[in-house]
Image 1 (cartoon, rainbow over the protein chains, first blue to last red):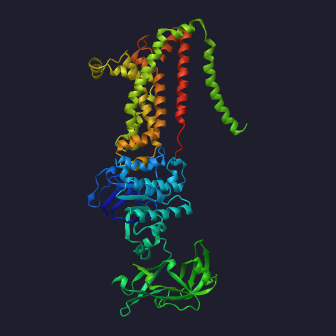
Image 2 (image 1 turned 90 degrees about the vertical axis):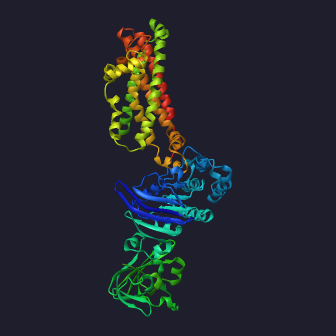
Image 3 (image 1 turned 120 degrees about the vertical axis):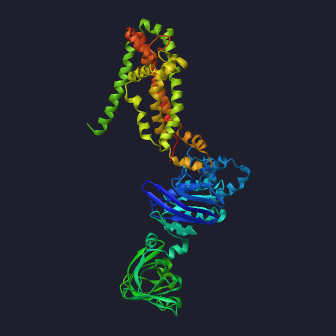
Length: 364
Length: 258
């Protein structure tokens, strides 16, 4: 387990106060925040390149705060990768093993396995200048993993790549993680990246941790409107709690005259009647009901009729812009292409949507 | 005239200007005293002395200049700005003033102590080395700092995270990456020391066979109207100069970096 407690960094205009994070051994944790929020400063402090004002860092039982970078056992892949240009790929990869005076025999098999997973055996004799962007990323990752670090730090690992290569590297990172389980802390501003790779996520905005949790918790249930906005939340509505149905364990909300029902159990007793809240549902959680098809019980409570205002083809999915008849509440709905074709949707068509109760989320 | 030709024309004018200057020297080559001057023991002595003094002065300048350049390039510390500005002192004050300042210094109690208990500088060979060192130490630091600035500190950061100590990161990564730039800085500084006149002649004097470096020998040859000798020496200086420029050119070829 990696533990960072009370990290405070003051640097130029950056002010990071009392930053905490915990990463399970073998975890893939994302530090997700907007560009320029000081995430790289945190990485540099964890690595020991920068002295934080306060804070303690443990790797397992060993406190590393105060140790120089070379004695922390933390590997680092910076955004610009910094492959050593005067060394061949092979020499780059073995740099850490040599620098730490490790026994090459013990690492040989492991490094060979890494090279195989990364598919770079044909590049070993080349200099970094003669590699493509994706190849450079692979080599940099491999170089960082070769000396078996206790913690791997990645700074925006998928930035600056062509879309198709980005997907390749994303798969590779996933494979790498499932095969070798390096404890990883990855910094990014790209929430899609965090969504597809991370098992734990820390949302970091304006020098403060806004939310920590498992991936789905964070994405489906943002703690605040700030987090929701940062995660690109689309369907956000001002709502008022109309009543709390104790018997059915449900909260009834009103948005623009329409009533929504959601399970009360998720919110304990924080939601009194009359309270103003923000209601949120992810675009991919909104379902368009197919004509003539029976609706499941779990969906029955939140069904609304409305009109399709616009449709955008996003290559891998379609975005449907929908507005309820009553209350004129807009919804952005993301549906997979095959479902879009089955539903035979067109602009101006009247359809019904269903919202799964568990997918609706309230923020105070 | 087009923009392009105006600009290129200007560049060619500068080239012709210098080339003409050098070629004009040959007008006097081959005179009776020419070969005599070339093979004269004092001429050979001057060449030897200049080579040796410039090399020693450069060695010491790099010895102190490289760590200084690294510090200025990589670290933040109190007084860095002042220190950086001071490196330019030898470039902005006249070499004669620099040499004179040394003469004054060696007449202070501390300067006298150094001369009596340590090494004698005034009108001695060590004085040449000292004057040249003073002229180039700031320059070589500046030039080397510029080469180090070009190498992203990120390389060292990664090397450290992979287990290198700061020293190892320096000689395994930063040094090889900046090697060509550093070498070019050293060569240029050496050339500057080799041709140094003002500070050297003021501090070490112009004694033939003792402290007469090549530039000083040119001056004394001219002062005594020995044109043949002056031209021989100038041509040798020019030859060295061209060799050096060629050397710097060679170091200018770089690896393909990102």
